[in-house]
Length: 421
Ligand code: C6P
Image (cartoon, rainbow, N blue to C red; front, side):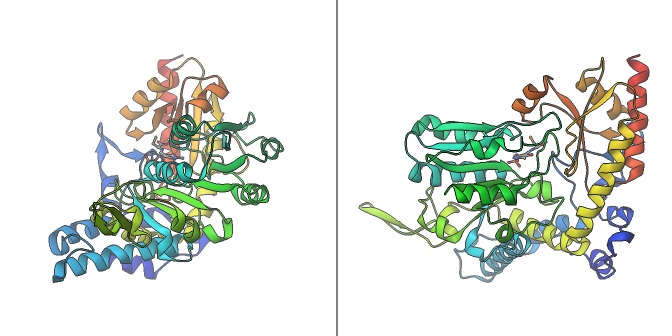
């Protein structure tokens, strides 16, 4: 953490006094102009910006400690290993996991979910077994299960969603059968922002003896997460959406489950012994970290978590709700604009369409005003199909965004209306 950031951390504000501009100064990229206008960055669900302390941690690693981990006895290697493992401990505390054995570093949410499917799934599921997904999943929480289903002849069942973008109450439990082995759910939907009642849904799955995989990619930047309280079996997230580097992610898994799962990739560091007659595996979590990992990425992610601890995840969650409510109210004032995803419990995302305007045109016009949003299907094609639309425009929030940012979006959408009268 930079000196400036630690100074601000010492002055951690109470929830009611949360000042986004205070924290925004830590994000150098946000100070720039785009097309001659101040940048308004509202594409945080795609990837979030990085505070100076994360940039410094990565630069410091490469300029002072760069070395491989778990391999050398020399000073740099020991320092790199200590920093890499310290980052793992920060992730453990951030998720309230019981042990660092349960924290596997991956490339991101996508890799974490594929790891579960290919390691747990291939070794534990059999032809005719069933997996439950929901209609609002990101492709990363659909396609790995489809690949597995093809390999093993499994059946996939889907929880329907309502017009507000909530999982249809009551429909979920009816999908269980004695063959249901696993439920894989987004904690927060990236296309709609819906915050799913995952604790209750996990309890139901466990009553039916099914395991629960939670895709936390869009939850961790907005809410405190406690995997022991949620009681989930696996939890996946990406560092880059959590204000950390790209190319680093996390798979949390219950220790007892990870211990009985086979490795999914072979190579250096994941083995204990290698002979041509057969190999044996390293202890957890290294069994799942084949090859040289993204050391700087893990250290950067650790720095991001330290930074978020200073901001306070409770403050972030409270502020996110407030800002989301403001944004929804202001956007709905725009003639012909329809919000897609109006669940009462949401986090971070305002998806919308405008009558007579393709979302890509919305994105292009607001970009000219310095406002960065994402347009498209958001890697959630089944959601688009459910709402009968090809795409949405999506503003996604972070704690450094302000009401003024949303006002700028509304003003830019006014320009869209002028062009498409
Ligand atoms: N969603 C978005 O703009 P990766 O690419 O592995 O870091 O994350 C994949 C992923 C998985 N689950 C959810 C809920 C997600 O939102 C994402 C990434 C980005 O919405 C890029 S498509």
